[in-house]
Length: 198
Image 1 (cartoon, rainbow, N blue to C red):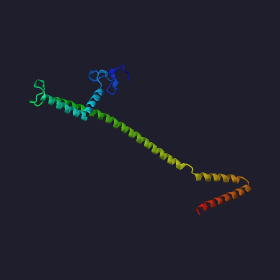
Image 2 (cartoon, helix red, strand yellow; image 1 turned 90 degrees about the horizontal axis):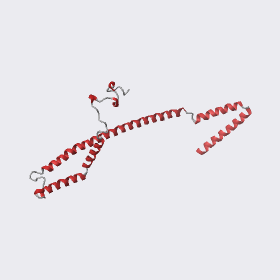
Image 3 (cartoon, rainbow, N blue to C red; image 1 turned 60 degrees about the horizontal axis):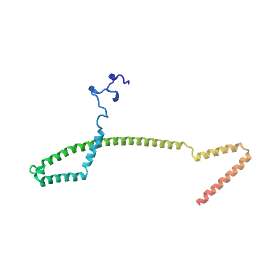
Image 4 (cartoon, helix red, strand yellow; image 1 turned 45 degrees about the vertical axis):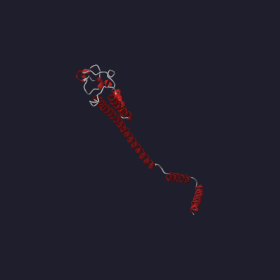
């Protein structure tokens, strides 16, 4: 499709060739901050909040806040004991209100990664299944091919038949001598086979 005539482009054309809807121009990717950078940042925060060191630090912070505003001279205190430490409550509420969305963002990113991993695993499993089926078909074809091969006994009988044909063409005296030798050999073979079994 030619790039010159952009007014003729429709929604079914590739994204790079489409004009933005309602005349809205898209910002270039280099102008907007990377979503991946922010996602990595939220994951780092969520990972940090899930450690015992964060709980210990938060406990130390709250205890030191309460101790300072209880034991320090009155003019140095910034939160009132009589009002129930309102500033501390606000700080902890603000921390909790930011922590929950960051944890959810980190979970969403993990879900996206898991989805991609599951898709790759599914494709790998499909390829393995196709390879296994192909190999099974090849093994069956080899087994069927092996049944069509000539066996050792078949080859021996064919060679004997060929030797017999050659002997018939030779003179009759040689044939009788060979038959006698063949009979002697067969008798010797029979004796050898019987002697080990007895």
